[in-house]
Amino acid sequence: MTIKPLSFAKMKTTPISKREVDSEGMDFAAPYQAGSGFENFLCSLPNLGCAADLFHLRDAIVTAYRHKHQVILACGGHVLDSGLGPLICRLIEQRIISGLALTGAALELDVEIAIMGQTVTSRERELNDGHYCLTEETGCLINDAINYGATENWGIGKSVGKRLLESEFEHLNHSIVATAERYGIPVSVHPAIGADAFGMHPAAHGESLGASSFRDFRLLAGMLAESSHGVILNIASSVIMPRVLLQGLDAARNVGKTIEGLTTAVIDPAASTAAITDVVERLSQPDGQGYWLSGPDDILVPLLFASVIEALGDEVI
Image (tube, helix red, strand yellow):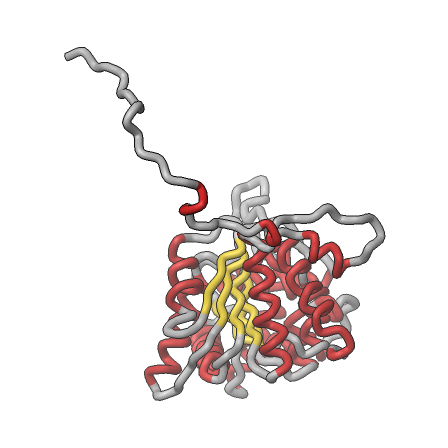
């Protein structure tokens, strides 16, 4: 068979005046003038794509703050590894953040920051003999706190937060867990046994770990039960936090709580399909709005909250 090139002579066309408008000229980016300030920088951004979603998310956080609705941050380990801890601590102090949910990896990194003011290598097999590397001080502090906290019916977040505040570590002001405990902000921690190093430390006890993490899941469900018209941000966690958030919200609704008007967002350049489905689509239903900001959290999170602070002005402490 001989294939002939297709003729386009009879191709139908549409007048441009009848085409649907995709973007207005007023939404295009504008040149930034040096020295004109942060507000003018924000105005120079296009009101399209990721920037437009960031502005919508900013407005939702500002509205939630003004009406005393929940703003909950769910964080994976990269949030701490990329140096965002001091920023989140300040947001806790300013009462912009009302609740935190952390993966086990995020907890480990936060404790390391409290102890040393830095994080250690992410390479888990760093010993020449091939043995799995467990950090002694981190594992001891976390598990000792959990083991004691379980006897007091505390969750992991509260147990570790109290232990950090009892310590004399030099860098506590950069620990989000310690700062949250100091300001009475609830922190839930959701470890994955077998994945988080502190769960394999010799000081770990499964009974304490299970009881404390279960209490923290109930705490998160309690936060979500009071989150109507609030904001839930899932930052740099594509597996654990999206599912935990969705299950926590389902649990709250199952026992009769009404949650409506949620604004949800994933901030992660490599978000999984499950994260987008669970957080952006399902978590915001039936009458909320979800967003996926598909850029690096170490740029987007500071930009987002700087825009929130700029909008609130003297309203924040």
